[in-house]
Image (cartoon, rainbow, N blue to C red; front, side, top):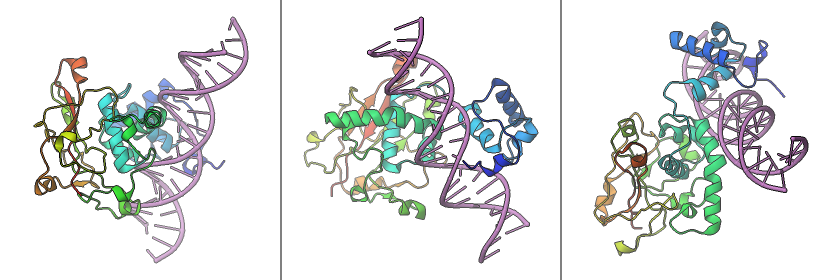
Length: 274
DNA sequence: AAGTAGGGCAACCGCGTCGCC
DNA sequence: TGGCGACGCGGTTGCCCTACT
């Protein structure tokens, strides 16, 4: 098999990184920054190629990485973002502070995909089963005109536009006592006139997602730094269409278990009437 | 206790894109 | 404008651990 160009030039070590190598890389980057990755291994005294150093740093050594298993709200967010973005793991990972694209990708392939498939097989209402097109973004027929794609590349990839509002405030997770709000639309094709008959979509099986009729739109818009530039959400359209305020909502109250903190909300506004 | 299968995850590979010359 | 190198990304591989037989 052909070796990558940057690895041809010198005899490079491959495979798992030793603690000594990690330490060398950390020490070098913490002092000098990575600069050009191709020069990092030489300057840091490592028998690795630049790509390997970059990967190790980004996926494992970089400060601020969140280790450990994914929380239910993170899983819910990944599922929904995957519906929107498809296998664009780097884009998905940007909405998950402390997570890398590799981590998200592995989690999807090892855990979420499996759960989604099993739920789909069981045809569980209001559960993971309602996520169609596992492994693929939803089709353009399901597109929601409220979501504007401003990248030509995205248009070429037929990025679906299913949502009226995606509000993620994950920055608040860094504070000890603030809710994490994730507003997703219900993944149903039509909205009945009777708001009481809304189908609740929940990516997580077994959580209480029945909330009061006035609990809606309580999330916070994502910051410009964290926002996916490809997603422009037109939340005004809800008002223009006089969408009834009762919102299907998934309330995940797991933060309380961990730190006696505020509940985490995953909030699904209704679809825009066709 | 030994062998095997499966899952999880770190790391590698190849390709596309971008910037520089 | 074309070539080249660097970087970033997604797909894939392979190792290690654990559960099962």
